[in-house]
Image 1 (tube, rainbow, N blue to C red):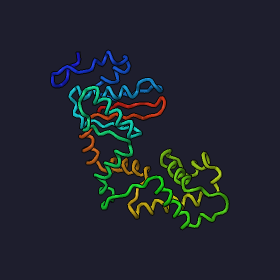
Image 2: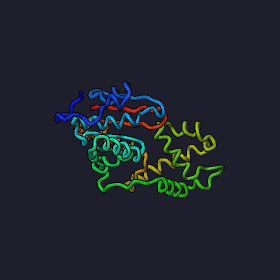
Image 3: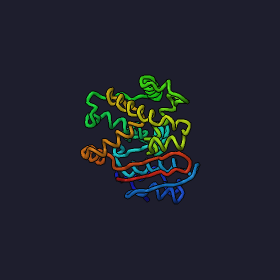
Image 4: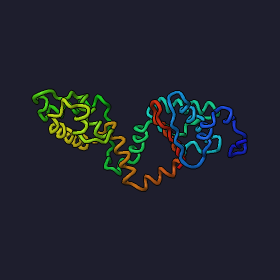
Amino acid sequence: MLEHATGIAPRIDYQKELNPAQFDAVTTFDGPVLVIAGAGSGKTRTLVYRLAYLVERGVDPGSILLLTFTRKASQEMLNRAAHLIQEPLGQVMGGTFHGVCYQWLRRYGQLLGYSEGFTVMDRSDQGDLLAMLRERLGFKKSDGPFPRKETLAEILGATVNKNLTLEEVLDRDYPQFLAHQGDLRQLGLAYHEEKKRHALLDYDDLLLEGRRLLAEHEEVRRRLSESFRFLMVDAGGTGAPVGLHPR
């Protein structure tokens, strides 16, 4: 029988509660694990029981990082795991990719030039800024259809999230705006400069700047690597992979 690091027997009979594949994923202590399964097959259950298993093994909850696509999903997993072992798990750092990057940037943002801090724009703010720049540059009076502010945000966001050029995004998803490719490129540059001038970040920037922070600053990478021994990633979506990665 599995023994807790303190010598106390665990509350949960993991072999009884889990199928063999789930049990292997939950109890593999060293090395990465990738779980690929369809909807309703128990991916979330696997993560919840792994959280419980790690803490019952004596792992410091503060050394666990849980990344999900929604805050609700993260909190639900933590609550379920805490209920299983009847222990609070408030020390586990759980949240969305954007939320975790936000916390790291608040802590280390000065290393990237945000000495006075920064402001995160929501989708509404982002659209308003793009609309203002569109009007300032005179594109509102351009011949032919020009993207609305919401569409502008989607187009510029796609170049980041899908790692595509502006031309590729337009050609694939917005061919009706191909004639405005030059204007859109100019608008994108103006948008970037306006954000930089006023220390503004949109949701895409949180991921980009979070990645830049880790890529450019070894001391931050080392500090975070030493802080988090176990990294669990819920990729979300039907049939999406779930990564369980001990550092």
